[in-house]
Amino acid sequence: MYFNLWSRDFLKKSYINDINKELILFYKTIQNNKALSLLITELEILEDKFNKSKKRDVLFLAWREQFNQLLKKNNSRSITKKEKIEISALLISLNKTCFNGVYRKNKSGEFNVPFSKKFKEEVSFFDLENIKNINKSFENTVIENLSFEKVIDFRKIKKNHLVFFDPPYLPVSRTSDFSSYYDDGFTEIEHQKLSELLIKINDIGAYFILTNSDSQKTKEVYLSDNKFFNINVNVRRSINQKGLSNKPDATQELIITNFKSFNT
Image (cartoon, rainbow, N blue to C red):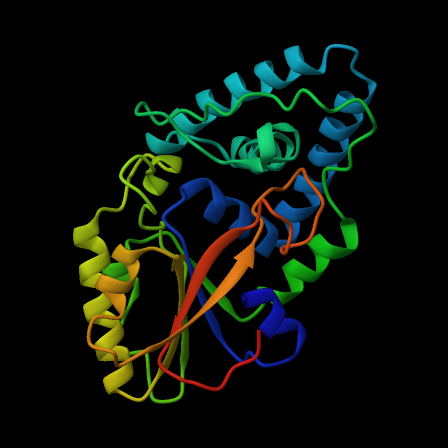
């Protein structure tokens, strides 16, 4: 959403927030020109090492262990600038070589996604032109790592502003748990709080878009008073696979808004 709006010159000033510390560290690394240059060099080294390796699965496990050790240092705030670059480089390298590009942590806060066995060809870890465009898009952007309660600031959200939400998804069944992909979790209570904030955003004349699972619980939480609009969409969420969203394995999701006219 953000990059699409920026590429169409719709954004004058932006705020990005995510609870994932590593993702935000990665964005801030790209935002800083000097750090970005170091990141690109590190990514080139890791990409070359992976493509030349005859034991990619062993290399992957070594990277995952190194990444988890750096996460502990980052959480304890004892991490160096060089190690922050390493976290960002490993984040992308692991994302491109793990199973389906999933980012998931265990209860100890360790990244635990296994290696994608299918990789035999050369793998590209990043697109240089794209990463430079991301750097450019962040010129007038504030990047935060806060809870949604703290980042939604009604002193800054004004009439005609657009706020986009992509919270952890409510489960589509009793046996599924979308919050398990990140160690902090996001319970139904948080979803209820978020739904109340959407009403406030609507009341001040700002616009919002929220994505979530196409489930009965999602409709109960966010659409109970019939004030807002929703549309069903088919999506695929797999970094390491190619295909169209209308394939049989596509997932049904909901887009919820407080305005009716929008294109999909």
